[in-house]
Length: 77
Ligand SMILES: [Ca+2]
Ligand SMILES: [Ca+2]
Picture 1 (tube, rainbow, N blue to C red):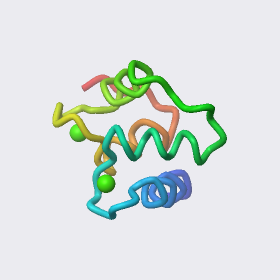
Picture 2: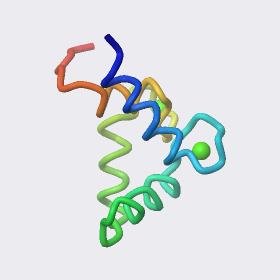
Picture 3: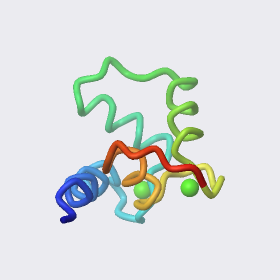
């Protein structure tokens, strides 16, 4: 039942290079490059964080990441 979630968790851990359970702008930038991106701009990374950062701490936690990529549901808080 949690296949999409597990896939998202696996990705999250791959991106979380220091293993603290939070994705920072730096880690997201590295992840983007690792995925074959040409390097996201600062504003693209900021926009990505803003779109996913529900608790407003400026980083992407696992739950926020799963909510963003784990499934396509659009939930209104
Ligand atoms: Ca981290
Ligand atoms: Ca957050």
